[in-house]
Length: 582
Image (tube, rainbow, N blue to C red; front, side, top):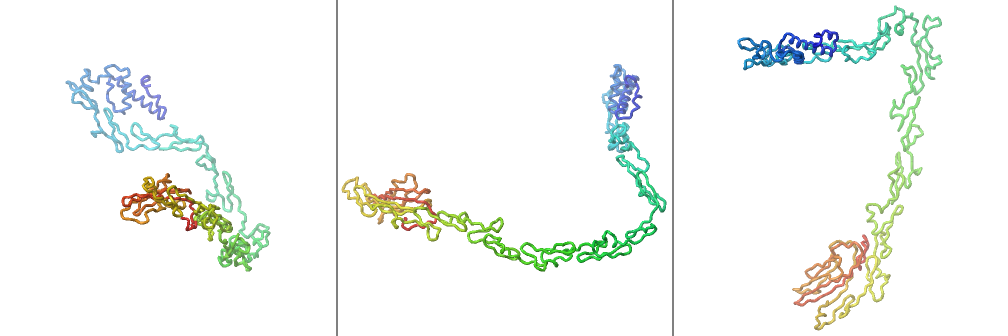
């Protein structure tokens, strides 16, 4: 518009923010056109804002001659950057100073030199060739800062930044706006913030709107005045002529003023003669029930007191019954009704159930007796040596079917010595050997070159000069051992040595057969040797160990052989062991 029409008047009609900005831009462009028309330099520093200076410079350069673009006024030869003072001297425009080269100009920072003229509450901002003052504190809500650094009210109604509803109209105020209803209420109404019309109660809001002797009655949007009538107080009513007030006899009325209690009429009122258990209430003018339980706590009933209309009633806690006087409580013997499954003991106000031996009270109801499973108790494994069987109220122990019998104490199992009782099945040529829970039939024959010299011993016959015979054991002895499984490791089970020790004897003991699984080991002692269990034996089994003892005495070697039959039986804890078992 500034370039084509050279005028900005058509932009003066509007007052919105967009219109004001466009008008300012147009006027800054007209400044540039004026510099171009007066053939002044487009680089001339004008005391305007930075944005306005850019617009002015751009409009000046648009279609300007070459000399306006590059050469400042008063400097035709281009020697001085801004002004030529004559005699080859250059000068600068206001807001600039001459550089040391004598022809170039640079901007003066008035803010640093303190040569600005800003008011209190404003700060200096340097611009090219000038400076501008800007407020330190913003204008606040509802105001805007103008180019002249003045806070101006923002018309929210004009800019459309208000929030008034369609039924309200916007009215601008300083720094804000108001929303007023479009519809106005008539006389006798007041308008609320939402625009609704509310009736005014003139009888309350005005001082005596009606003349003396008249009554004010509010109506919608107005009020009316009515002549006063005779108004009788409580307990009185108008006579038939309507001229005076007479007493009302409430005791004769159909409403039964005292509710069945005695009634005494009084002027303008009445009084009740209340029955026992009631008290007269002067406010409600009626007979109210007396809560005897609250008025006499702990003095009427031994246990619990319950108020009733006009009286009270006593009751007892569980375990008691109301006595004949209706106030005290007697203990109830609950055991007469047999509440317990076994035994019952009456106590004051209650009862206690208890059980016979072998039973215990249920944790659920405390009444039923439940059987105690003695076999399942933490000590149940020690009640019976072999097996425990629970029975109602008790238990009993049992032993293995063969080889054992129950001891007189009813808990331990004792081994049956079949060899003593004669219940074994050994032949005449065999000997019976008792073990835990059974027996073994034993027999042996002496090998060639040996003769039997005892019940379990074989002696070597004379050898003469035969080296093979001399290498045979001098004596072969049979031994029989029995013990239960899981005996401690190590445990010595057999000792072997010369019957009479001689200084210088050298004894060597070794298990030469029957220890393929390494359950046993030979230990050397000072006077012989010993056989020790070195691995736990957990299962019943039989072993036949050949233990060889070599004796070197006076330079001569002699060999002795022990054939040990080992019978490992079940570990039956608590078994009464027969002394002949080992």
